[in-house]
Length: 156
Image (cartoon, rainbow, N blue to C red; front, side, top):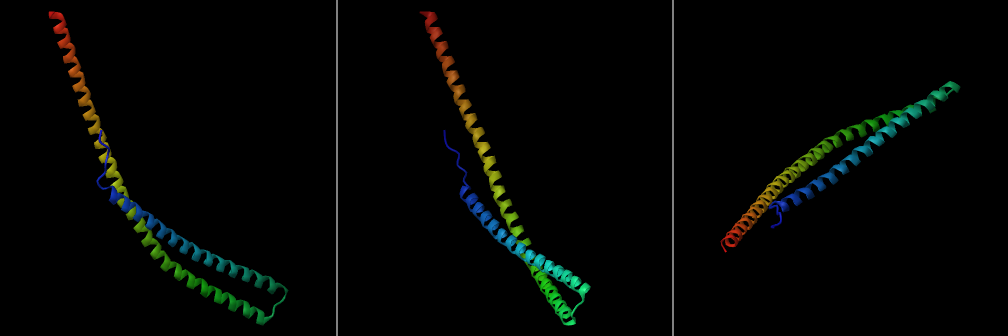
């Protein structure tokens, strides 16, 4: 019996490698987006902590210079947060692009996998059909041989 051979196996392997590359690229983008999002969250937490500290100091009395310093700090942190948010927006564009590339690479690979599966099923049915033909032929030869033996045995 002949072995199954998919003629496009090399192309399938290339597409699998391309999909793995796209997965790595997408994972890198996810890491970048996560890092910037974590930075923004840390900035927002620092702002909230600073406002809380400022509020508690206001209850016991405050130094105008210290309050001014706190507000400058908060203002600068808000500017930094806004800059990080703008950077996150540009990263999200690249993130979406890499995600779409990964989806397309997965589709391309899946098309070939499905084609391979269909070809394998066709091959398997053909092998089974050939085996059945061979078994039928063996059965017919055996029946003819039995009939010939009976005829020769019955005449003698």
